[in-house]
Image (cartoon, one colour):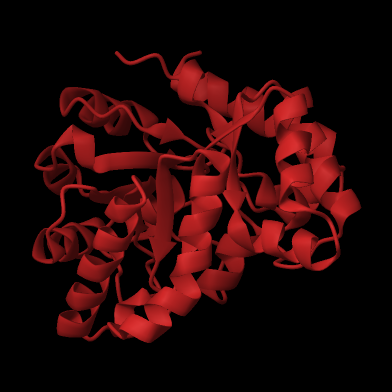
Amino acid sequence: MPAREEKLVLCNATLIGGALELTPEQMKAIIDATAEAKFGGISLWAFHQLAVVGAGVRAETVKGWIQDRGLTIPIVESLIGWEGGDRATIEAQCGPTLDCAVFHGAKDVAGVVMNPTLDWDAATRGLSLLGKMAADRGLRICIEWLPWSGLKDIKSAWRLIQAAGGENIGLVVDTWHWLRQPGGPDLATLRGIPGSRIHCVQLNDTTRKGFGGDMMMESMTNRLLPGDGEVEWKPLLQALDAIGADPVWAPEVFNVGLMQEGPVPMAKKIGAATRKVLGL
């Protein structure tokens, strides 16, 4: 079994509820909270760095805040707009995120499809180009499926990756989306994917039926701590081990109630719950 603690990082955007805009003070606070909760690194939203730099803070200063707390940035989020296949759009929307990853020494950059429908040929073309842009920078791409989007499940996400080609393109397995994807958990598809293509696992929890209403809104406001819902952790972790996956482990728990407790208590609760389900 790979050493999971060594690759355990926090998606610290959850500490401010996934807001795209934040102040430099908020950025510093969530970095400090990540360190206080004894995570080794951060899954960084490039949007946050761009916001802070836009407020007048140098990118080198942000890097210093992270390094001074002994944290690393192994993965950066999030690539959007690539599924349309238009080169100019991809370069404009995804290029800065890739460059942010290079700046922080990250290895992986995560991406999603936000549109509710998908033009398969355009998405294949766009992902292929994105993979090449990343490879030119020494990066890997990992794609996350969203059950409410045009890329709804692990099967279609893996099929798109295969169609795009590029050995540096892999998957994000988010356990909320894993449970809530159409048809539920798909161990058969997961077991057929080479472990080297599972670049990141985002950990959180939910119930099979959910809490009603808008699925995307629920996902951004009412995720549960790992172990507090109905995700079956043992078969999922066993399948990942069986295929030789050695991903970044990145808990991502968007939860308004937890957020109200403050960044440090929230980060510590996420860390404790994550370590418990991972057996750390």
